[in-house]
Amino acid sequence: VQWYMASIDIEDEMRAQEALRERERELQQLVDALPVHIWSWTPDGKLAYVNRRSLEDLGISGANFEEFTRVAQELIHPEDAPEVLKRSANCLKTGDSFIMRYRRRWKDGSYRWIEGRCEPLRDRDGAIVHWYQVSIDIDEEMRAQVALRERERSLWQLVETLPVMIDCAAPNGEPIYRSRQLREFLGYELELLDGKGKSRLSGTLDEGVHPDDLAAVKANYAHSLATGEPYARRHRLRRFDGEYCWVDTRAAPMRNAEGAIVQWNVVCLDIDGEVRVQEELRLAQERLARASQAASLAELSASIAHEVNQPLAAVVANSYACQRWLTAEPPNIERAQKTVERIIRDANSAADVVSRIRALFKQSADAMAYTALDSVIAEARDLIAEEAVRRRVRLDLDVESDLPIVALDRVQIQQVLVNLIRNGIEAMDSVPGDKVLGLRVRRIGDAIQIEISDCGPGIEFPDRIFEPFFTTKEHGMGMGLAICRSIVESHGGRLWVEKNDPHGTAFVFTMPVEMKAAA
Image (cartoon, rainbow, N blue to C red; front, side, top):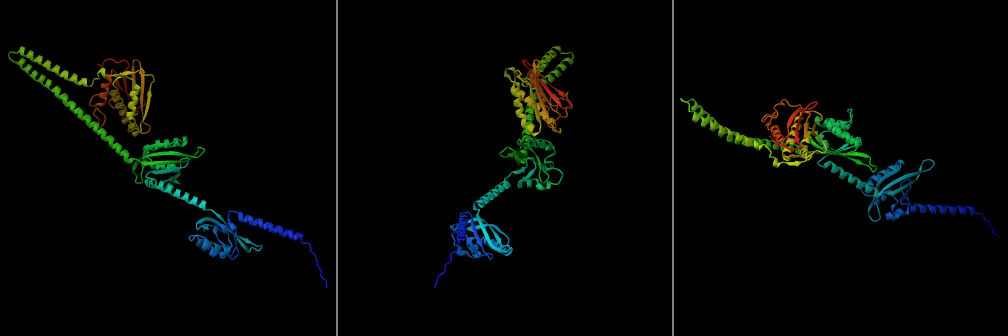
C-alpha cells in the first residue's frame, strides 16, 4: 500500500574505501616494481602470492606451484633442492627464519644464484599467520666470488709449486707465510717459532743462518726494514738435515696507493750447487795456474842450468888444468897463464848468461807509456772484486785527486796490485768480524806512494819475505813478492813492508813521477 525509503550518508565510508583501494594499488605497484622476487606462504607451506617480476623472470603461473615441494622440484637446482627442502621444512616446524643461497631456474632454462630470505608474520598471540619470502639475484656476485676463488687457488698453486723458496713478512719483518719449498727446506712449520721468547724473524735468522754470516745478514735486514730499500745477499742457510747451503735471498717491499709498506715479499734461491761449482772452478784455475807457473819455472830453471852449466864446467876443467901446470916440476907458467885466461873467458861467459836472464825480468823503458795511475788501480780493483765479495772482504779505496800521470807498464803494475791485494785478502781468511783491506794512494815529493794494508795476523819473517822461493803459504812458490819487487824496481820505484796499526801488514811501493833508468 506504500513504499518507505531511507537514505543514509555513507560518503566518508566510500571515500575511505577508495583511499584504501588506492593505497593497495600503490603498494601493488611498489611490490611489482621492486627488483626482487616476493612470495608469500600460508603457515602450512601453501603458496599464497607471487609478485609479477617473479612470474616474468621465471616464466611460471602461481597456480601451478601451490605446494612448496613442487616449487623446489621444478625451480631449484637439483643439487641444491634437497638442502632447501630440508631447511624449509625445519623452518615451518620451528618457526625460525630461513636464509640460504641456492640456484633457481629462470624461464630460459638457465640457473642463477639467489639469496632467499623468509620471515614469519605473527599475531598478538605469537601464532604464525603468514610467511613472506624475498629472493635477491646474486648470480653476478657469486660468479665473481667463484672467479676470485679460482684465481686465488691458481695463485696458491703457482706459489706452492714454483721451484723457489718464498716468504712473506709483515711491514716489521715478521714472517706470515712460507711456501712449501721453504717449509720443506727448513724442515719445520712457521708456527713452531712462536712462544720461544723472540720474534719470528730473530728465531728464523738465529736458527737458520750460518754463524759466520749471521751478523751481516741481521745488519742488512735491519737496514732494509728501517729504510724500505730492497734486500739482496748471498749467505749460508741450514737445511733440515743440518747441512748449510748457499742461498741467494732477495726481498722487496709491497706498498699501497699511499706508498706505505704493507708487506715484504722474499724470494730465496738455492745456489749451493752453483757456488760449489764456482769454488771448484776457482780451485782448478788456481791449480792450473800453479802448475803452469811450476812448469814455466822448471823450464826456466832447466834453461838456466843448461846455459850456465857449460861455462861453469869449462871453468872447473881449466882450473884443474891450471893447477896441474902450476904443480909441475918445473911449473909451466906459460901454459898456466893461458889456462887462467880461458878461466876468465868462461867466467865472463857465465856472467853474460846471468845478465841475459836478468834482462828477461827487466822492463825496457821503450815499452812504457805515461798513464793515469788511478785508472790502473780501478782496473785492478775490478779484477779482484769478485774474490773480495766471496771472501767477505770490503775494499776501502782512498785515492788522492789530481795525481800526475806516470810512465809505467800497465799490465805489470796491475800484476803487482792484484798480487798484493790478493795476499792481503788471503791474510784475513782467519780473521773474525769485519774484514777491511785499505788501498791508499798519495803523492809524496817526486813520487806516488801506494799502500795496501790488511788487518790480518801480520808477517812472521818480514826480513825474508822478498827472497825468491821463500814463502809462508802452504802451497806457495815464493816468487810473487820477488817478482813484484823486481817489477817495481824496474820502474824506478821501491817496495817494502811495514806493520799495520793496530794489527796486520802494509805493503808500500812508490812510483817516480819522472821516470829514471832502472839499475
